[in-house]
Length: 205
Ligand code: C5P
Image (tube, rainbow, N blue to C red; front, side, top):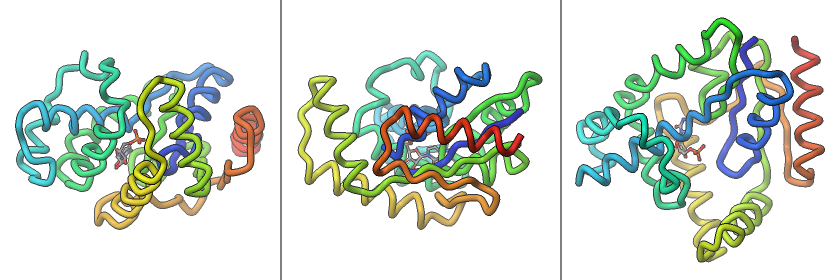
């Protein structure tokens, strides 16, 4: 069984994907981390994230980098969004994601293009959204919890900038697959969103 979970940042897709993985006993890949590692690596290499050659060179990041907490910060999210527009980068990360999806026992992947590009034949597809306000509030709360300085206006602007870039890029833009179940989590608790997601998957398998 392959489950694809897509949606914008702070929509709840990561939390939902993790909970689904636990519920259905499937291995889970957060594909955003791969793009974050490339973004972080291009900066470490002194390269330009907007230059496809530099971004492609940064795809050869060491696996250990995926465990680095720096990947989770806002700045790295912005770099990830910039390197992810290059078709070369998407192609370089394609096989790793597809191999994960095709493993014998099944898998769950979350990202932006899982249901459309990486696993178009997934058994169940979810497209998770939430209003910009709800997503801003979540990001602020998350940063405050981890002791990071949170500037609400800046976070909101970052979310909108990333959405615009992810939706408008020519290759694998953020868009719901035709057969995806839409889940708007704006007014949902995590528990409710997870319950709805499990019900949606169960109705499709
Ligand atoms: O999901 P997350 O916020 O960690 O992703 C960081 C960035 O990586 C996104 O803004 C998006 O530009 C890019 N990304 C992507 N395709 C994916 C996952 C993430 O383009 N499958």
